[in-house]
Length: 282
Image (cartoon, rainbow, N blue to C red; front, side, top):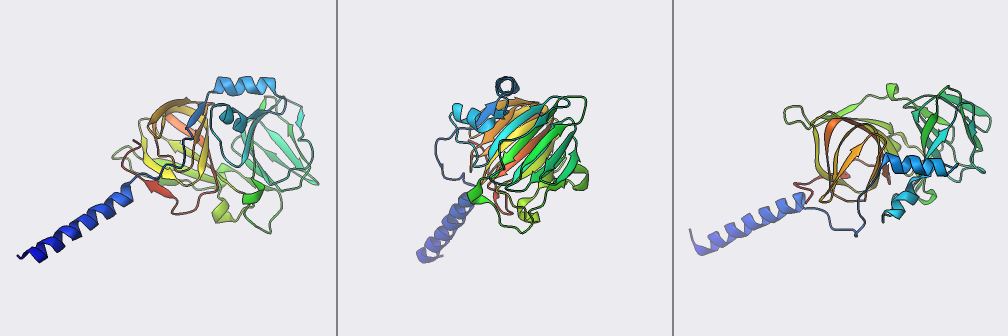
């Protein structure tokens, strides 16, 4: 084989190698924003001090992180009491029930909800949430960033229960990478008037979600279980009641000690093709 053919072959191999590295390489660093975990004790302390609920973005800011464009709070309402925000909501607002039973009323309509249900209240609504049960009512409220709301003609109150949704399974059992996702608010697929989406992720004990990144920022609320969330190269232990924040395009990996179940907010909302596997988080 002459030198000309050898050189051409080497160039071809280099092109293939470089192309492969492009696929598996980590994303460009978009800044020094850290991943953050807020403990359940810090959240509960904030709840006890603030009648308007625990402001998650404020807690993230205190930890040196920007958080997501959407505003996130955790609200507690004692039995028989009513939570009423001041004035109409400036953007569509989603309520996810962590515990208890509620009646959500917006303008002239109302709907009952229980643990795991999600209610979307239309923009410009005067609404309230009544605890109609005998135990404390706890819910997460997420207010869309107005500049990023997806346009839609549907402006009615929207309810979604987990039993109405078929879980989607990823990974496989042979290498302990199997997990399931229930897309509670599939903003892209269901054309909802939101800037974000919500999902419940279930990861069995001793299973791992491999290293990957998504283009949006993510806030996770631990509904049950415990495990480890690695954000960038920093491992964080998480357990029931904790919140973790993953900045946009930050490489992440998760391993469950006991079965992990967490609510996951992605903002801006997830679109197919915006989830990228990588070889390692470091």
